[in-house]
Image (tube, chains in turn cyan, red):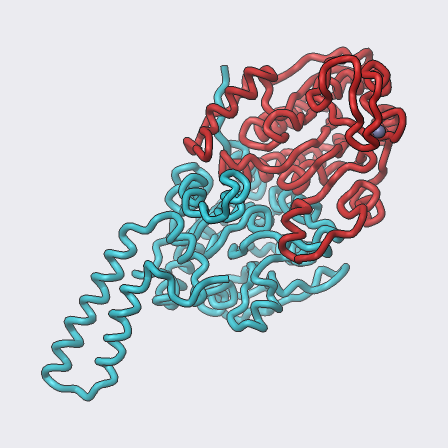
Length: 317
Length: 268
Ligand SMILES: [Zn+2]
């Protein structure tokens, strides 16, 4: 799916390689000087590349093969994760993980899309594209969370719903729709974090909540840039243009009023420094949950309704 | 009834399914169903209202809601130009018309999509009108009937289109909480974000025969799995068999089915 080194990240890789080589050399006055200079050079290179990313480049960072995935974030921000499996009606979907854990001591339900790292794992996780049983497992865990008064944290990172025969046969449209309806009235706080690709209905099925956040280089879109280019431009190669036109970056979504907060990423993206990324996510989620816990359930649900009720832009005359 | 846009104007019309040349009036008198092969032609929203409301009598609602161009979207043509051209040709209302009237002498709201307006795509206008329809049902305690006919989300409004699915579904959650009946009619085609929101959320889901109904489009699936799709895949009868619909009803019996369903949920 993703290429090993993205062309626009090549300058960073070059400096990084030189740095690694220097680090492996024995210490000397000369080498230490060079090391310091190269370190600064690396920072400057990253800064200059990342200060001016195009939407298409951000999309590629969001899909970066080294980017942390949901289980990395769960393990990096929470303790005592108990993963639950299965939708109790058909199967377990490895493209979505769900369960309960403690976030700095506070019990939460946590649900997210899961991509694989190795080739076999990628296939097993279906590249993070859920089948209906994934959404249904997610809903089962959300209902458990509601029953036991646990807030829900979701991590979104999927290219989208799986366009396969089996997924259609088992009613993925119904499964997504039901999650939208039930999440709208789930009587516990929900915090949503888009960590990588927020791909269409497959993303939205975990995306209804009281606070919606996006990592700085994540994307959220109604259709992939490639898919949009193929339909509107009749040419998949126009994906760069589609990525710009669709307004899919975190700052775009903030501006459109769809998300509440952009969580800054470490220099060079989340994969450059996962522990720092985890600390930022943990802090943002805990802050949100602390605020949301103050509301009575009725007020919480009323505000959640208003939040989505006001999304969209139209004229009236 | 007015001339449907997918049938050539004039006295004669060719059925796209059996290729028979048919007398236009005969097809119209048969609710736009081919008398030879029972192929269901697409209907406009107004034709749905004529068919469903008592005596066809209805009042259009929320007609002032119109498309903005929130992203300033331009592909091979600007979104603004596209919407203007459609509106000039088809009148206001975008891809969804909402009307109030009576069905079997009980007040009801019908929200009907029309494919001829940008492929029945759902953007902010469709989402807003559908949500207002739901909220009207909530405040006046009315039954809601929707007729889906859509290629999916309106890409030109980006993620705002996606969020209409959430907005409408949140409204339907309230319908359920307040015990108000919602009947979803699915017609050819119902795909993408419309299927994955209100079309699949009826207390009763009724489809017309042979309608294409799914989330992913058949072409996208074929490209992904690199296989030909089985005969009848994603058609109404397939969905009925797989438990996603309550019934498949030919158009001539559709009103009767709706009335019988509404009776099931009417307070005694
Ligand atoms: Zn025919």
